[in-house]
Amino acid sequence: MDLIARVSQHFEDSARTQQETVELLAAPLAAAIETMTHSLLNDGKILACGNGGSAADAQHFAAELVGRFEVERQELAAIALTTDSSILTAVGNDYSFRHIFSRQVRALGRPGDVLLAISTSGNSGNVVEAIRAAHEQDMKVIAFTGRDGGEIGHLLQEEDIHLCVPVPRTARIQEVHLLMIHCLCDGIDSLLIGVEE
Image (cartoon, rainbow, N blue to C red):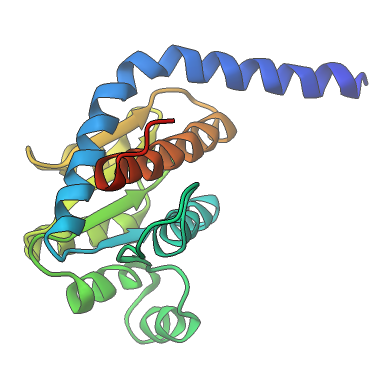
């Protein structure tokens, strides 16, 4: 097995996927940046959720907003719904794993807030329920999915934003999701404090 060739192929496949999806995703990403910034400027917050690697992405996004991305600025209101082990285990035990995010959305979400819902398959049951709860709370949803968008693609409403990476491989989807998170963070900073670079 030629490991150097295998590694090189991953780099090439990742770069190709990013190049092939930029035209598809640039406009909805810009709209997502505007939606999130509008919420933050109006005392709203962004709740983020996902499972596994997508949970890590939700936490990464919240950390960049509460801390900073690349430049100093005020703290921004973002919460990863994936981090409170007592809530996750209590709700998972008392209700079901399907409701670990939706109960938090109902508890914490308010009209004008935004839910960042991340699911590579588009079919994660607990993310689907979080989206339903966000709609009940009059929140907008920005959904990161992959493949054909799954159930989430059909659940979104007109004012929501769907960012689907239409490729079959999970690793490639997650790599583009991470790039999109960095685009969101950079765009929010740009609109809030005029970052030019």
